[in-house]
Image 1 (cartoon, rainbow, N blue to C red):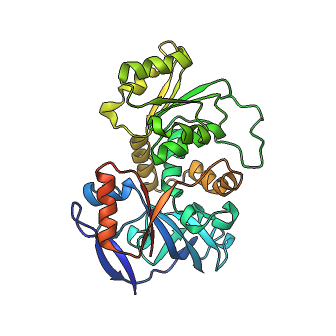
Image 2 (cartoon, helix red, strand yellow):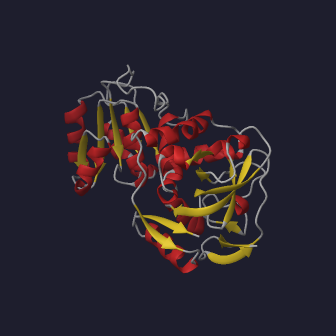
Length: 339
């Protein structure tokens, strides 16, 4: 038996429980969880039922830990017992989030959606901050349901090679959020000439270090923000990624788009829901496979960096609920839990 933190009823606090240690299936790994990190998705699972399947459901979507058992299959055989990995909880048919949820001591991982921590040059604490926020932005930007940008080159491809996105601009609304930070880095990987973000002015130095060329203070107001974007892009902006707003507040991105050219606006939450539907239908997403094949190399090369975080020791339901309350109340600090 092992310790876990679960949801029994949507809208109620997460609870401590004991449950059996699962067995890995085909192309799966059994992992001893060393760290996991919380995200707003976990808060929305607890409070609103996002990604909730059936009780008792173990919370947690981001995993880092040690492989202790291999399932059958080619993908699983690419890993070795004793290796440390970072991975995401999967949503595939036949796999419940009771076995795959990260807030427990042992978890089952789909080997296709994992990367070797050592190859990324990361600690487990750093690695567990990557999966959900990074892949959420990646799918929104590169999947056909999102901006449908060309997938960035591997870490072995020089960033000076020709790119159809060079001399083009992208606007990232909410660049200071955890997902927004990764979107800026992926935009740099895609070699956009102008990476404009609307974020807190106090984060300007950090976001420019990640790759932003222009940071517009999110407190500038609607009209001033649009004016500043258009002063940079004129009437050429055709790519907007909104990492923070829901559909009723998409007007800023729409107003910034070109009036004379066909443009695209993708909201992070819309992309997440479309992706979830595809995964639940059992469709393997090549863009997700590309992410997991390349993420370790991009991190090792310095093109993608883990998020900043604070640590919570132990599977403490009180501390987990407190952290989820923080996400509910607008506190965006990344929380790493060490079971």
